Length: 365
Image 1 (cartoon, rainbow, N blue to C red):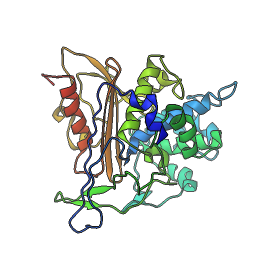
Image 2: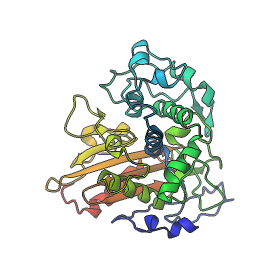
Image 3: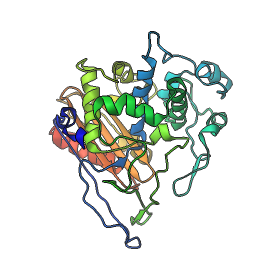
């Protein structure tokens, strides 16, 4: 493809980490295992969120006047938005993008079984009214995919385009990305989704694109590869240093401290819009499943006491895919891990931390 020859794709960050493995269960011999490459396409789950925010920022800046503010109440952006009375009148787009509404993130009413979504986009607003208030508004960080579903409605309403069209026009074309899409080609260089059973066996999931047109497409529906994610990281880090803008003019706001992951607030572990930011040494991976499997004092500390480092990260867990991306602005570096299985832990996070430890030669982490 022509875009592979573009300088923005070939000028890699200092470290390129590509981890992947395609396995076929013995009872599913119809697909031959293939060795992945940096061009192999995977589902990236919640890493999608950073792309949604970039699209919103681009739409916001179109024209002479901003179409909305991050602080615009959601009720003024979406007609029919209803929820807890206090939240309904006060919750802004920013609150939903940073997961600080206090609303439950329970997805059980929308999804079941092998990649089957029960609700259509038209049922999103009525479904949000059923979410329980389980935390303190603007104080507690409670991860919530519904907020990014709402953000997707705002994006499509104000742009007049579908999410796929926004993604292509606002991000993919300006950055010359090759494979980033919500409409992947499963007959190309594509990693099919798998799940780990309780006994550790691997089971191939149905060959479907489950997020396509679903209620959670803007929460986790993007598919891409290592090369594109490294180009994405490079653009974000360049924009932070004001060396590049493109679709990322508001990157400083996107990466800012919006809500602490821990309460009371500390000097690190904050969520912005689609990114966690913290200063190493610290416990990381708190947006993923490992933080649900272990208590904070059981999780490893990443980093060195003699080498403090700012890092931005996010994890993704889709149906049959786990992923992780870490960015380090001081060294203009990034680590990307993509896997095509739904494992018994967040293995993409563990792999990323092992490689980061080796990359920076952390000896006491």
